[in-house]
Image 1 (spheres, rainbow, N blue to C red):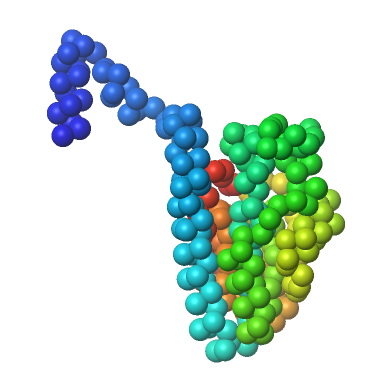
Image 2: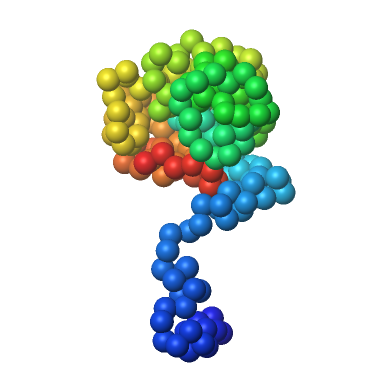
Length: 228
Ligand SMILES: [Mg+2]
């Protein structure tokens, strides 16, 4: 159907590449992607899909923890434990590192200022998973791509969002940059070398989960940005 439509359009313009064919050869339109991502969030589909993955992880943790010696889970922070939706929407899905964030819901909202303000709410399903894991004697570790200079703000934010206990919070050393997995994978290895078995790793980016050192990875939806 699409092929014949393209052929007809192609013939119509006398053999030159048709507008539809030209569009198909181009990257996705960013404006269309913003509309689709906003609709995905605002319809409730994002929260639904997120909660489905968290429920799968929770079931796996409940089944696996009793059969495991010193079980642990690893969670990412942003778009896994804490939601930055207010900042994401204010910046129209762009990433703005510097500058203040004092006009919400209007942007721009500097990401550094936003994270240091410690205002991000927790995902209720993730918070419940953490509490459930702890009730099953599972150690909880956060491994985030945020840098060490955000440790105090991140701890304060977790407390404010109702997450009060964890066994370790690993932030990226100030000298570490580049691919997230180059820092996250060795950090999970460090946790396992302490004698824990990581039964589940939860994150919103493939780079949160690659490289092993977890029995099972759970990838949460995030069409809003990519951390390679
Ligand atoms: Mg994340």
